[in-house]
Length: 106
Picture 1 (cartoon, helix red, strand yellow):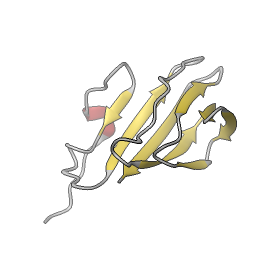
Picture 2 (cartoon, rainbow, N blue to C red):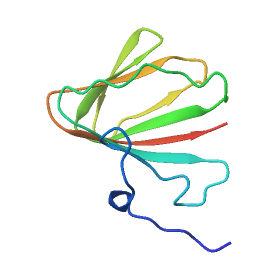
Picture 3 (cartoon, rainbow, N blue to C red):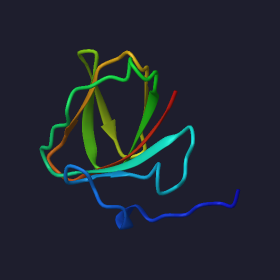
């Protein structure tokens, strides 16, 4: 299989700033997304208990807090956070724009 390349800006966002890249990259086992957060944006609390997907959130730009099972984890650019499938997670963005790369796999 040949390498697959895509620019996330060419992938239509869902909900304003979430670019799902899995299909465009022809990934079979890995989900990859780019999330662009507006100032003071709050994401939906969720988990992946049903699909067993562990996730890693990498904050590329900005500052944000990720609440994991009620514990606030402050993040700044360059930080990476691994989250178990059963843990509820929610992103709360800071006062300026931020960009995450999200990766997940069962």
